[in-house]
Image 1 (tube, rainbow, N blue to C red):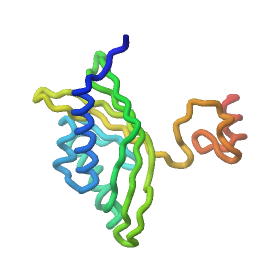
Image 2 (image 1 turned 180 degrees about the vertical axis):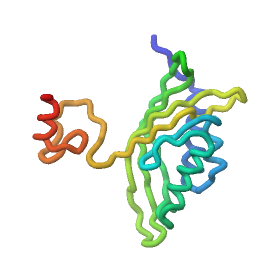
Image 3 (image 1 turned 120 degrees about the horizontal axis):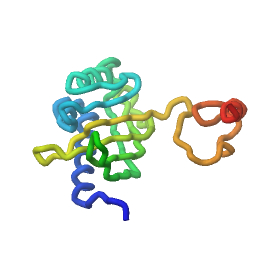
Image 4 (image 1 turned 180 degrees about the horizontal axis):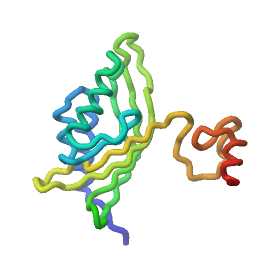
Length: 176
């Protein structure tokens, strides 16, 4: 039987994910950084991989302040959360994979909308103080038609395809 994540650990990691989203969506850097190990990292487009507190500060400053009003009113939602134990030579923790979406209330137009969607691939570790924190957070944004798909390429309609390629371009790529 495969190893499973205990209900207690699932609940604790679910709380960590909620604290992460609340801090990110309310501009609380200290709360956000507290969700990560000291040497943890975030990889997010377009900021790239951001290591440690300094990297997290650079990422959040870019997200929150590069374009006034752009980040306000966001609400990150994680769904279909999968958790599995991960035990390698390098790391032991819980691998978290989920879909995410961002709802946003535009503070200028007062309109509500879905801002973006994607997937999340994250490693949470139990730290010496007994708290779960993120060692790594990889955020994959669904842009330019790039969405995960394991089924047959015929699912893609005309003019679209995996990695934003048209069916004919995708078929040619698959033949290579």
